[in-house]
Image 1 (cartoon, helix red, strand yellow):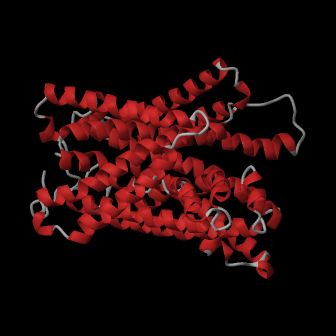
Image 2 (cartoon, rainbow, N blue to C red; image 1 turned 90 degrees about the horizontal axis):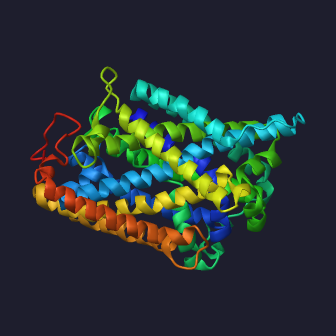
Amino acid sequence: MLDIAAATMANIGPAMSFYFGFGFLATTAGVASPLTILAAGVAVALLGNTLAQFSRAHPSAGGFITFVGKSFGPTSAVTTALLAGLGYIIAMASVIAISGGFLELMLEHYVFRQHSVSGFHVPWIIWTLILTAGAVLLMVRGVALSTKIAGLFFGIEMTVLVLVSIVAIAKHGAHLSASPFEPKDITHGFSGLSAGFPLAVYLFIGWENSAALAEETDNPRRNVGRAVFTSVGIMVTSYLLFSYATVTGFDYDVAKLGGAPIPFIAVAQGTVGALVFLAYLAGLTSTLGALIAGVNSQARLIFNAGREGLLPSYIGRVHSTRRTPTKAIVLFVTVSLLIIGGWGLGHLAGGAGGSMDAVTFFAESSTMGTVFVLLVYLASNLALPFYYRRYLPERFRVVKHAVLPLLGAAVIIVPLYYLSKPGQAAPYSWYPYIALGALALSVGYAVILVRRDPTLGERVGSIVADAEEEGGTPG
């Protein structure tokens, strides 16, 4: 349980997510942006209940794909597999890119700038390719080794983030304020909270990592849910600490905070200069941990979809000796790299080569991926009541299996609206149309596939993560 909880939190990548997300969140929600994080944490906990209840009944490496498919039928399973696969690949492309981009930032700060090295520059994409190749080699060797390394990286980043936060708060002890937790200090009130809500939710993306590792987890019916709630609880508490320290470190000046390239590193610089290197190190280990943990779990979703026939069967094969889903991992990473390359070529073709930095791509790619992932979250919350009423009516509980998932579905609509509302700058204005187009194509493909193979419905969720059969659990 501890391994998959650590891998889940590594997938969230708190340093990476906070470094590149909190400045924009604070600009949107204001001084009381920590309250927005708290609201997002409650929303993610509602989603966690859905995942935990599904995993208790039917633990599967297919995760949300299996859960939606068992509830609504094979057409929904294929549609969810395509949307989830696409969303996670696009979102993971942002992590893959920022791994090399952050290393470039670190080298620029400590090698080229401080030692006046000029005329030599390694593009961030080269570092990205090197780091990604190393991560893939670890993952194909086995989940035990790679999750432990991801957990180690997570431990390093959390230690540094907590240390810097405590020192920053202590240094500003004479000027501490409760305003970051007062609703009146949210910019524009409820509308500001709502506008910042999708940014805060993104800080938690990856919380569902545990379910995809169900087949490699002891007692997954119990431990997947425990890992989910443990991870969400620790992340909510940690983000509240980091956000309070950052707002305090900028003397509650949101405009100044939003103007900093990486606000948390600026706080470390203003607190104790020696902490800056540790803050950079935390960012690097965070991106690598998120890369390893994210691909590990999310590639298993498309692996299971290939194994069950929802996607091409080639994806559902494992290594002959290591038994790892090597083909799914390589395909996942390859498509992510192609997305990065296509984005770069698009900028070159449009004459915008100067803006081809990893941070810009991280923002654009992670937002697009989040739209798809939120659609999957929404479908999963709607599916839970149907699943329990259909398969386990004797275990159906109104609060756990109806009220909480419907509340979870309701809160997902808020970030979906703000990510899709008209009037946004390009490329964000294109995302709703891309998502609708992908949804339509996915449904069309699913309908054709199910008509060609009427037995597909029998294979959805046919592989349960453990041998135990609990009281009528469907197989």
